[in-house]
Image (cartoon, rainbow, N blue to C red):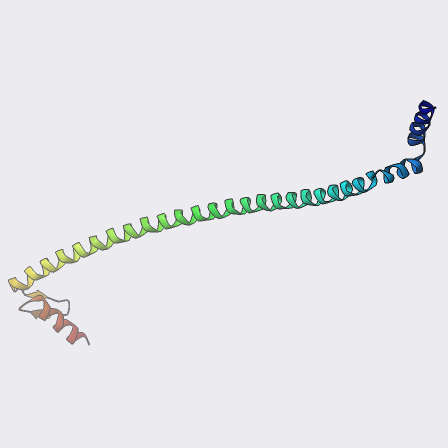
Length: 140
């Protein structure tokens, strides 16, 4: 008799959905299944959030790479500007050197007291500075 009852219960559990849920509810399985369903939903939401976060991390890394590339370009431009500035300083130093040489040469001419002949037919005695002042005064 017990064996027949067991067989009947197993058959009913397999074939009768309503009976299966009634038995499950009686032994508390339904509550456990509901909790498992809620946990699964929560876990799915966490996975979706996690995927969004990793997508954002990927986007941030890509943007950071672009920023590094831009920064490297800026440093190359700074380097280029420094090189240009060095060339300008070199040119300026050459000009200062040439100006010193001209001053030395002009100083020697002034000291010798040469006479200068100008295109207007005017001759100046004395130093170069006086001659330039005279030319400037006469031409105005």
